[in-house]
Amino acid sequence: QAHGYLRAPPRTSCRHAARAPCAFVLTFPCCVAPQQADFPFQLAPMVWKLLVKQPVLVEDILGVDSDAGTILRKVAAMGPGDKPLQCFEITNSTGDIVELVPGGSSKEVSYDVRDQFLDLAMQLRSHEFDRQVAAMRKGFAMVVPVQVLQLGSWEEVMVRVCGVPDVDIELLQANTNY
Image 1 (cartoon, helix red, strand yellow):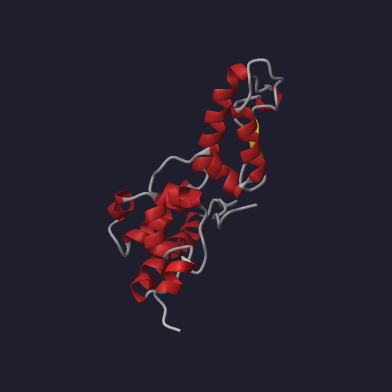
Image 2 (tube, rainbow, N blue to C red):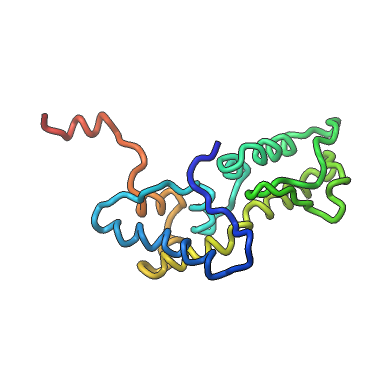
């Protein structure tokens, strides 16, 4: 189950078609934010982390792809005596199985090579949206200097663009006249 929207990598080589919607995605909220309007959909935390160039963690992958995230968690938790869990391959965000090394479909992930598997899998999953994230950063830069993205955490940037995701009911009641 996904926790927010994640722009799928394009299946074609058409660069212009893949970039235009992404640039709009962050241009739109920057334009409506001054009018106190809310961003119309929630991007996955992984996207925000990529936008502000913060590291993507296994939990972020789990938030957009529960199967791949679960595999990554299980491999990370492997002990020295555990049987190999799988081969050097993982499903990407489009559902394709990708070999992480040549011949990866026949190379088992044992405890001794689990760190290599995790590094390669995280590299694949955290870089498959590089073009889309770059286009979103470009859209953001059309309205606000892109350096603003590095001034805070991904959560702070998300709140500045989208508003507070939760409403404090007690605070609301304390400050509301009935």
